[in-house]
Image: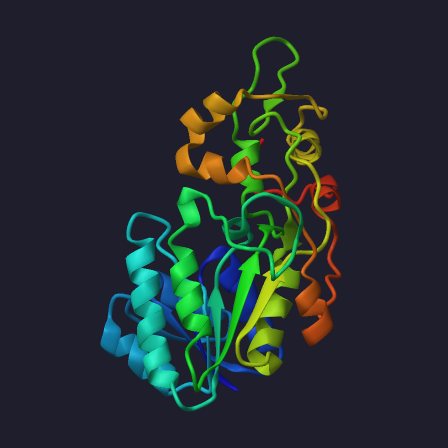
Length: 296
């Protein structure tokens, strides 16, 4: 399949690109500069210089593809505008063709919950509230085999939010402890980046139109358990300390609000419909193997 991929040099996008190439797909990746072009070329994709704000380029690349996976996001105040425009141009190119389009959301849009599924109502924190109307519009587009993937907290390959945890404040003294995000009793839904890549590719290849998949392994450790594992990985012997919620919000802003959510999810629809089975190590096992980026 000829696949147009956005976000191919990002954390998740690089894993998705690797999986697409491994399964024999021909990938065209939209990249912003020559350095990124060389990076995706080395991974087996054909780079095209441009960005998501270039409506003509996005439309042209989507129109020339057999399917599209959209992962790119600026991660700043322009995210809502850029994501909405990109989805509009991609859907405009694909409308009426029944070709597949895989769009990205996130588990955070469901808010806190002890058993979050694809049917759980949206209750997003302010950081990701903009995703909800875009997802609703994407899913209602006729004539396109749309699927939405909503990843949980992603880990693996030494990247992801674990590095934010690892770079958190330490307590003072001869035996410093790593500060947790909040009190540490909240759960995070988790998924290994390589398992998530499999989900994206399966959604592209075979998801029915209008599908919505939570990308979560079903392993939902507490932030305390995660932070203890990070603490061991960076040489602090598992020592951790809670942080007042107000301090977390002061330190991390809207991101802190999202990370304080208490979320447990399993990704049941992806298992049932796509036969997706996460196979990688759990987040704590991954940390025990010292698979964390260069933070010590």
